[in-house]
Length: 190
Image 1 (cartoon, rainbow, N blue to C red):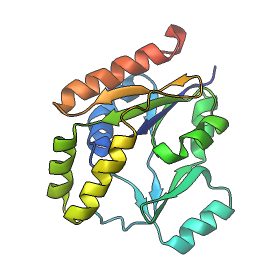
Image 2: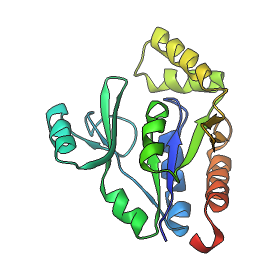
Image 3: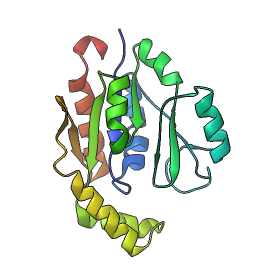
């Protein structure tokens, strides 16, 4: 039986990377692999555990069919390694750090995908982005405004988008993610 693709989305600063790191062990205990993305950002950059590559190497990999999903956002290219297809065929569930803008493409490729939107209160998001120090105050406010566009994001087509609020403790969000995964797959898949 095929596994399910868990497609985690959320604004920059919502805590996706922290959630993924904290949830890695509990998810693996449920047969859910966590994918390491390929990004055109230096591997030394602060943030997620991703493979940093040059734009030329990224494009070469894309042309060679090394990615099951790929997109461009915020001036960077992101790729999900094609190995996830094998994992899904083997019955493993797979968590990817996805893009809200790329969700329709991901759903077309993986119709059984479970979309999860990580949300965070504006004041918490603003504080996290300021602490991170990657963007100017003006860029941060633009992100906050873009985040507001997704507040009403409850579904795409007939597919419910599951929401996880990450404004409070990370342990609570991890527990909610694990519970969501348990509910999103059939009992014989756990």
